[in-house]
Amino acid sequence: MSDDQLIERTLAGETEAFGVLVRRWESPIYGLSFRMLGRDEDARDVCQETFISAYRNLKKFRGDSKFSSWLYRIALNACHSRLRRAETGLTQPLENLTPEGVAVEYSDPAAEDVSEKLQRDQRATLVRRALQALPPEMRQVILMKEYEDLTFNEIAEILEIPVSTVKSRLYTGLQQMRARLANVRDAL
Amino acid sequence: MNNCDRGEDLVAYLYKEASPQGARDFEEHLKACQGCREELESLGNLRRSLKEWQIEAVPRIEVSIQRQPVEILKELISSLPAWIKVGGLAAASAIVVFLSLALSGTRIDWREGNVKLGISERGEPREARILDASSSLQLTRAEIDTMIAERVKAVQMEQAHSVEEMKSQVTSLSQQLARTTEAQAKLVQSLDTVRKEQRILMARSQSTLGEWLFASNGASDQDEGNDRKN
Image (tube, rainbow over all chains, first blue to last red; front, side, top):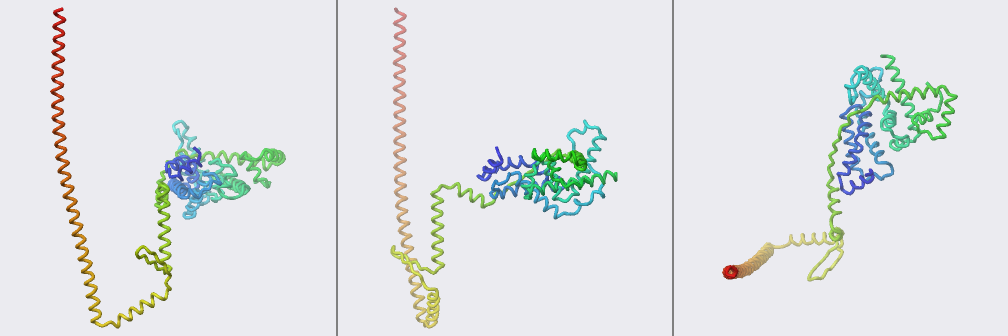
């Protein structure tokens, strides 16, 4: 069943239909929120806020854009609100950070060589820190392109900006990331 | 650092979102621009690094949706039959009309089936109330006593009338109760009679059945005796 059909059913009073939409979109919304905010609890909260807000405003959704685009927009607005509230910690320069901690859990750790796993974890941590050090407007474009696999047009629709701006933000963001990662690798 | 100003084209080519013509143009450009070639390779490597950060376990998001009272009300209204909706709308309209008339100072007299509408001027009732108030100040003690006595008498008469009405109602109800009790007794009596008749009928039918069985057994025994003789 398509998103539009599920929306129609939800508006007709079938709350179970909205549950299907939640299950369908919870993973990408959580992924984007987690990568934007860097904390599991925050990402969960944003997810809940997003779906509750979507449910309450479902009548206002006119179907001009895709339901997923609308959801991403709500989630990103919630992320930006949180980032504004707690600006400290997430935008500190990467040069001051060390690649401590393990951010990623792999499905079969026993099958991997330990040193290889450690190296991969270290690289993942560096990437995470480098992304979090970027300005949010660049970070969100990279996240949507790299991890959510959205097209330039979809990103432009979600952020309500021209496609050329999406491309220029992506290009500048990637360049900044590369520079930050190069600095850290040189320091290490 | 690439000094070429074709960053947007490069990004479109990198993510394979360039149009066929745009891709061909950029490939031609790459042949001549070493900076863009190096940039493309470098950003390609960066993309591979980005893929290192994967989220394996996505938690299940619990969303508890509490329906708003307005939504529930709307759903309830939509589930009602059309005639109730129309009736409700008519009643609401009537209330609005009456309220508007009342607020605009319209007087409605409904006596003996005749309805009279009239618009009273705003100053008039207030003036009348003032006149009433001033005239009441001029009443003597005797007049006030007389008015009170008349009012008390009227109330007593109303009470007496109400008591009479209640008595007659009680009498009527008692009579109804007596009639109902009598009818109930008759009904019980007739029920007993029916039961007795039913029992008698049952007894008769049982005895008839016994006789018939006895007769048929006797006949079959006689037949068997005749067969043996033969």
